[in-house]
Length: 132
Image (cartoon, rainbow, N blue to C red; front, side):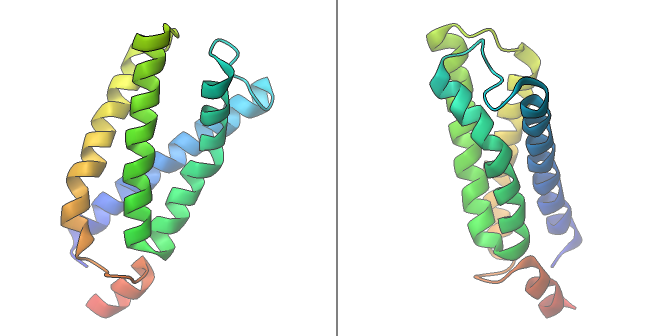
């Protein structure tokens, strides 16, 4: 596997892990549904991201294609729901984190075609062994 593509996958996995850690920290500090400033449906989704983000990381490692697809779906949903929360419902979310998240969504979607050919239906571990 080319080094640059490994770096892209590591960046995607690291960002999802950061998201997981942030959501877990919110739950630890505020209880199972800590986002009381937002309607309950948003609260449930953001809380569920603590598990969903971790699942993306596991899939990126174990089944690369599935992880890439799931990463793209999660990011599109997250950016869409956060944008709706801000502009449709009027939830007061911090501006810059949502902008950075939107940029990351673009990175995931843009990297997906370049990463798709790395390991058809194989794990990252298997792809690494194949290219060695």
